Image (cartoon, rainbow, N blue to C red; front, side, top):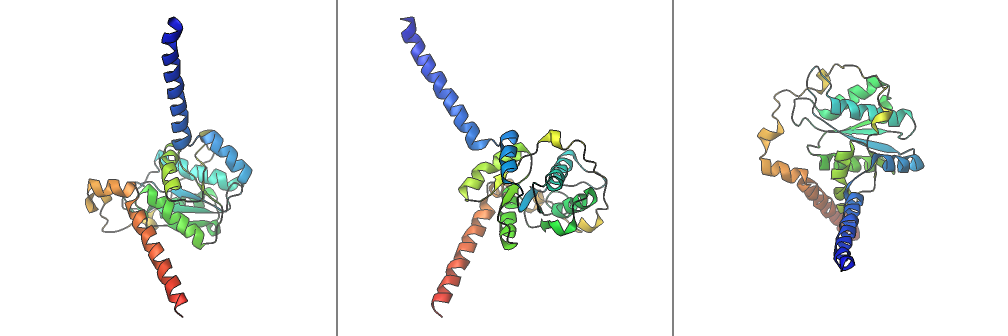
Amino acid sequence: MKLKLHIPIIFVSLLLLTSCNAYYNAFYTDPTKCFKIACSKKPYDVIIVPGFPHDSGTVNGILNERIKWANYLYKNGYAKNIIFSGSAVHTSYIEAKIMRLLALQSGIKDENIFIETKAEHTTENLYYSCVLADELGFKTIGFATEPAQSSFMKPFRRKFKLKLDFVPVVTDSINSIPLKPIDERSAFVSNFIPLKKRESALKSLLGTKGQRVKKEIRKAKKLRRKSTHDYDNK
């Protein structure tokens, strides 16, 4: 009788464990596992580093970590080039330009730095940078940011069939890299209006979920069809 009572409990436990593992594999980017993959594939032609708001006179912790991680990947042969992505979104500084300035003073060569300045959401960081990477002829791409943000982008990569690997920050690798203040004046935007005043909370949420990217993809497909049609009619 006791055995019969235990069978449903065991079944439910196994089901929950399987579900947890499935969720983990589908949505979480484990830094250790991802780094092992990066080690086997290096060097990537380019890594994409998404922007983060910059406040005048300071370098916040998240932005600091992303630049240090990009520096580590570049200096240790994991990436040949870097795309920094981000517009002036929440502060009056263009995020990609701020990151470029920080990267330059950290020792990354200017010839290996590219910037994308249209993105206002992480989905756009990823998509616009992939488009730029394709235009530049880069074939192998990594997306380098915190594990949480990488995990958030995992379904998006699958949905839009983006060919890239996630290379989330391994914190222990970046502690010894120094980062100094910069002259941020060249990245300043005058008459700036923050995103929250330019669009509603709903529109911002839709942007985070990739609405603008969907429109861009539809537009690109339409242009390709038109180009093919025009070529066939010559």
